[in-house]
Image (cartoon, rainbow, N blue to C red; front, side, top):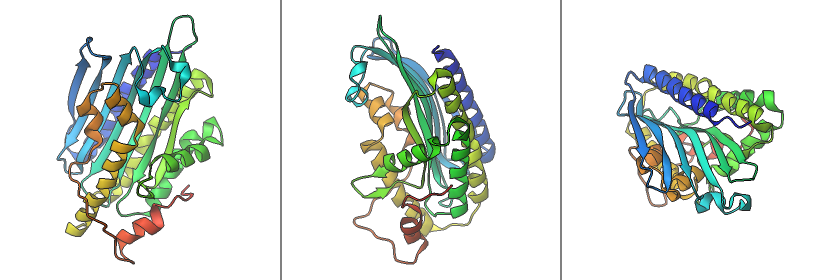
Length: 303
């Protein structure tokens, strides 16, 4: 049986746990913005956005919960799913992006979500989606291996085939096709997942969500006090430009939210606070910046 209330309760609790843990490391609390969309709008619902800006560790960190409903689906969600025609829907999830101040700490993204579409006299259509991925500026092989192993362990109880599948899906999804390069070193990504039935699929989602702090906190605490200078900050800002390009051009969650009339401030909280672009810039061979492109961005078996 589909239990949307249980999913909602889990997601709100996950948001609490993650923001509490990051605030403890940073020393600054998250601000909470509870919002509700007017019932007259085409997308109805509410959410809770938590944001930390200008912290000692996090330059910008956002963790958002949303639970929205609508009568018709936006084009990004319905184009390839004819069975969704004529259905009302609800979608809920927690999504986060952390942009640390120190360039030696990777940016990280995580999302877990549930989608349910219904119409009278028909079986509901539902699925889970989500995952997490790491975007370093200065690669560290131990960090990459730890992140991927934690992702792999979170999926192991649900089938040996899931991590290889979801890892490849992540590599293919978080890829800037117009640049021919990966956004980062990947992790796991899945969508439209219902293969294990509702209860077991929800259990898998919880395992992924619960693994996030174990995957990221050790990296954050190990790298947050590393010495850096203007050169490293400049490269961080340049690489953040790739993050912006991906989110605005390819990201399904961003497109779904904007096309369905979602709350723009919450949708775009993933944007980094400082970004730069340079015309046809290339790193000098043999530099740590060049190593990101040669040693870390190409897909490989980190786990």
